[in-house]
Length: 171
Ligand SMILES: Nc1ncnc2c1ncn2[C@@H]1O[C@H](COP(=O)(O)OP(=O)(O)OP(=O)(O)O)[C@@H](O)[C@H]1O
Ligand SMILES: O=C(O)C1=C[C@@H](O)[C@@H](O)[C@H](O)C1
Ligand SMILES: [Mg+2]
Image (spheres, rainbow, N blue to C red):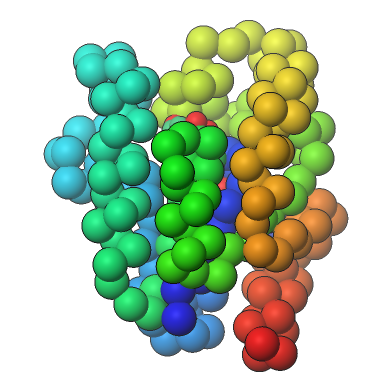
């Protein structure tokens, strides 16, 4: 079984992915970390040296490569679903879960962690909330293609993992 976790930056994909992999006793793969290890540089560097289009090409390439494997939890990048035919590939090969969070909560998390996230690094703190609201609205079209949607606001990491586990058990 492959479980993919989808959602905006800061919604908890990496954290939930690691926890679920402990429960299912399988590997957890983080697409951003996979890209960093394969390209031997940071995402920030890729964006500034080679540009976003190069990043999106590599992201699509590594996604396809990872989806050839079996039995793992995959935490996607925040933008992965919005490019190429990535959502079709994801839904074809895995059980996809959208970790849904309101922009206000995402903004309060990301305001402290924006430096290594090139999409928001240039924004002033007071601009972040509005940017995320608009960006999330645009991205939602793709995120909503996930097979399952988990409302994550006000829920603990454990509660979110339990919801995902329950869904997979009832399949
Ligand atoms: N349900 C939760 N309750 C409280 N804190 C959480 C929860 N989920 C995640 N966090 C915290 O929010 C921050 C962002 O989480 P995480 O890095 O897992 O998000 P992400 O979706 O992988 O982000 P990115 O797309 O930038 O990689 C972390 O500091 C994490 O500990
Ligand atoms: O939302 C986005 O477009 C991104 C999210 C991150 O996970 C990284 O994949 C990168 O910083 C781009
Ligand atoms: Mg992450």
